[in-house]
Structures are given as C-alpha cells and as structure tokens.
Image (cartoon, rainbow, N blue to C red; front, top):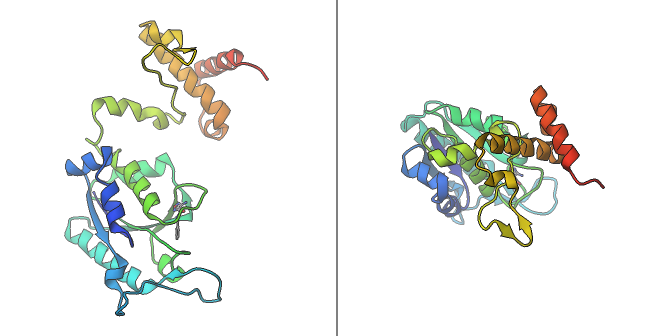
Length: 252
Ligand code: 4GY
C-alpha cells in the first residue's frame, strides 16, 4: 500500500508517521509514504497557494491550481510505484463520518494507493474538491488543518495491514471489531487510591475473566453508546449478561 499526502506542512506528517505501530509498519515495508507541498506547484514568485474568497468574508481559500498539480504528481508517482488506481480523499468535517468498517475496507487492498488532501485556512476551492473521489470526516469538530485528520486515517489503516501488529497487540484491537467498546483494564498495584482491582481478575479463572470482560464491554456500550448496540443484535446470553450488569450498577 502507498499513501501520499498533499499538505502545506509535509514535515508534520513525516515526523508523526515515524512513531509507534504506524512507523514500525512503515519500516516493515507494509506501506509507503509520499509527501507533496502545493507550494512547490505555485506559479508566481511568492509561491502563493491561497487567495481571498469570492463573495467576500474572512479568511483565505486554497487555490485549485497548485492543489490540482500536486494531486496529479502524487497520482503519477503512485502509478509508477505499482498502485494502478490511486484514490483521492479529502479530509473535512463535511465528509462522511469515518467508521471501523470503512477503515477495514480501505486497509483491505494490498496494492491500493490513497492520495489524502489536507486543507488549511477556510478550506479548498470547491471546483477542486469536486474532482476528488471521497470526502471523509474523523469527527464532528473542526481542527486547524487536515494534517492531523490525515494522520489519524493513516494510523487507523496502517495498524490493520497484515503484519503491522504483534501477537500481543492483535488481541487488543478486537475491541471495535466486536462492535462493542473495550472493557476496563487494570495493572499493578492491586490497590490504588483506595480502590481494589476487581476480584475476578485475580482469580486465575480464564473463562470467568473472559465472561466478565465481555459483560463490562456490553454494559459500557449500552450506557455510553447505545447507538452502537442498535446496529448489533445481542445473543440471549449477552442479554442475560447485560441485565446482570445493570442490576449491579449503583442506582441514582
Ligand atoms: N473534522 N475531519 C476535519 C477537519 C480541518 C481547513 C479543511 C475533520 O476531517 N477533517 O476539521 N479538518 C480543515 C481545516 C480546511 C479542513
């Protein structure tokens, strides 16, 4: 897999992509990163990439010209690098909400190429946005530029590539794959700030521990994110676990 990012701050993306699971997956050759600065495709002496909005108003808009040239260069580089069908993606709050399912789809094709457009200022000229394949939002909030959203998408995809996670890490990532929130975690010491670790976790009874964790995941999901349960049928056993969890919750 190859991912290219069109950004005014390529160093920001390069630096962040060196850390943790994402960086290690890159070292393992599971994905390659290409960076393109639209400023390098500007046509004037000042290397201008933004201009005032038609219709007036505050702020600046990224010009279609330099962005289009940068995107073309990124697509050409991907084709030359064995990615026959580059897919262009704009990160913006107006995009389709990113989901675990979409991440798995994007991670699924080994020879896939993604060209991510990270915007700045007030946004990108709509005529350029209209040429892109997809628009994705990482959440219902606004950040100052598309670089962090692009890095989040890259991280979510890279950790799903075969060989990215070690055995110990692979178990952890099942949380969302089950359609439930993760269960709570504890480590030493056994007592902290007057609170003990739940007894079952010290029991050595692996079946009971697995069942307790599943119950915690169900209870948390029902309480915090009932919307997730709406799209997921519960088995009879899960219904029983959830009912028992609810009885154990402090009232009021
Ligand atoms: N939320 N999800 C997001 C974002 C910032 C200027 C265009 C988001 O994906 N991207 O907040 N992006 C900007 C800032 C232009 C996008």
